[in-house]
Image (cartoon, rainbow, N blue to C red; front, side, top):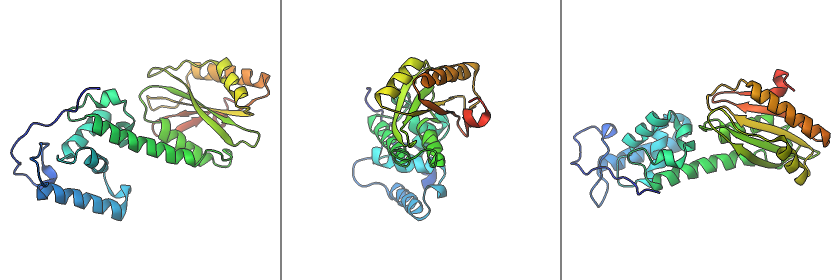
Length: 253
């Protein structure tokens, strides 16, 4: 992994605190305008939570720990410009993050810690719980885990006889518009886990959850293979950027 880039040293800018450009700071205490800015952001977050802050300010809070001696607002804005929104910054591949000027290993680590924490919290709301009665939590988890990824991922949720989630496993990754899935492997894994039912989940990086013909055909093949072994396919969810599609609700199953 390449070494972090540093911003070029420059005199402190004669700008308002919120308009400071990205510069490396001399050793010692932070200049008051940056220290005060960070203090204000932390206070606003504690008082109002994330909903009280735009994406770039929330991203600044994450970057404070990774870059303790720089004004991080320019980098926060650049990351949002490159990737689009806060969630897509968090879920961007490390290699792509490292291509952004000013991003090094410390920044990537902080972003990935936040992403992992969000996914773990969402997963805790569904694991070892009956999914049919926790459907909203399941949808939230799937969006958190998959909605903003740039390549297709295919996951299988394995359920026991009480429809309790016993395993959530990624079966395959693909390209921006295709992921290879093998029905035999899905059913084989279900038998290994002694699962009685399945929920298929995959994302559409385009943001549109409308199923393709390949999605429909693949789902039918998995359903047929599962039924021969007495395993029920409850649903197939396609996760888009803003919404999801249920095969069961739309009449595909």
